[in-house]
Length: 314
Image 1: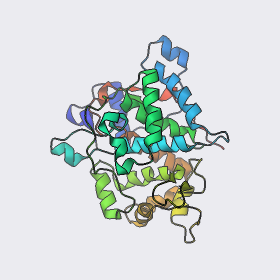
Image 2: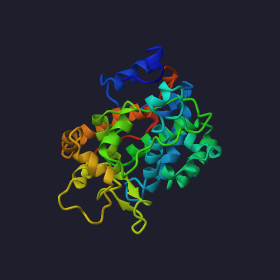
Image 3: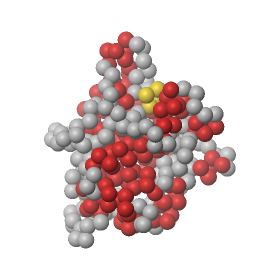
């Protein structure tokens, strides 16, 4: 299913074609291609500044042990929460705003005070400072930081990353993010209204491979959703459905019900033994998520080449 201006005016540029191909499953959502900073800056590419942003993000996201840290985890969640606040239903009703527009970073909009965004306040402040330092768009920074954080985690894919979005002019609509207590039917319907089908959702939920909870079980803050939260691996898929759960983990109720749903269970189990499969599916899924609410896809520029290289072994 297409999105934004690809749906209304069609492909007008090479970037538009690339994004359309990814959305339709005709082209990979990840890339190992590296463009050196000197070449990008000499060509006066809009990607030039993102090498400097990337350097700062690596310092912020990479732990001393070589794994990704709590700031990286928060940045991934931030990307989901900003982009996820959009729906086809709202668009059809004339409310085509929200999505990957950076509204979550606009202090005046007070999205940081919404219950669903609790725990993101610290990373929001850090991203606000980074946006001011490098004079980059809020919408782009949120999504760039999310893909940077993923590839900073060992085994994480290098998700194709685009810049040039328009920043928000109003707060995102409320009530469009999932609850960890929702039933699978409600969760699947919520995401289908974002053009995200059960297959795609199965891949996206795997981001909990590197997550920790701080607000669901306040007696055990920092408890992880899998045994290796600093590594982007497939342990999450297996440990969520284990017959004898690891008592040190906190498994979200939403993950349990999605894993058991017939529309997702086959793909869920397929990921358990296939890291490459999950990385490929997640990358395409995240490109889709990062384009929700974006109506100038044809005008974007791909800056994947400025991201750190993926680490396929750890």
